[in-house]
Structure formats: structure tokens, C-alpha cells
Image (cartoon, rainbow, N blue to C red; front, side):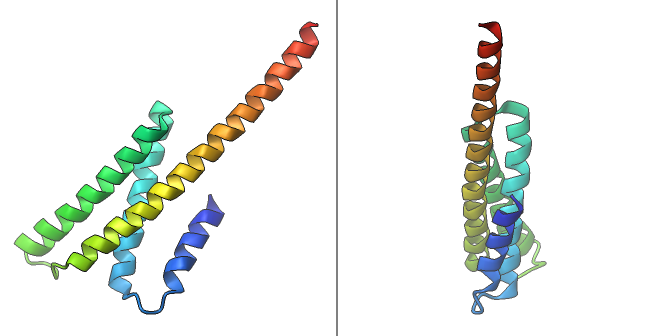
Length: 124
């Protein structure tokens, strides 16, 4: 998981033409997906629900921040580029979450098969 996070951050920082503001929006979108998705995964063990919950929460937070905080309250610069950056970060987070959960499922299946093999050989 640390390697995936490192690669994500490195891929964003290697692009010199991306403004720091957009990087922050992408990083927050990425973080929201991972946090909400992980909590949902721990509670339900359902991959699709975990990713969907993370993506919708991140997308909703991005839209609310841009339309309400920046638009109506006027405390920031309303920008469609910020929305795109937030959604891009959420997309990266969704892919990362999918890879992480698939890896965990594969690991659990291998451990389960080892356990079954051990109990089968003991019982014979």
C-alpha cells in the first residue's frame, strides 16, 4: 500500500505543469476515497460498495466545496479545473482501492487454501 501511495504522489509531482492548487485537490480526492473506502471495506467486506462509497463521497465533497464554499460563500476561486482535479484524484483513489482490495482477497484465499490443506492432511 505504501508503494502505491508513493507511486501516486510521484506521478503527480513529476508533472511540472500542474499547479499546486490542483495537486491539493487531487490529493484530497484521493485521500477521501481511500479513507471512506477502507472504512466501508472493514465494515462490510464488499468491494463494490467500498469503492462506490468512496467515489461518491469524494465526488460529493468536491462538488460541494466548489459550488458552495467557493461559489456561494465566495471564500475561494470557483473553478471547473478544481473539480476535474478532485475527480481525477478520486479516480486514482478508486483504482488504488480496487487493487488493494483485490490483493487482500487473493491473500485471504491463499491463506484459506493453506488452512484447508493443513486440516485435510491432519484429518486423513
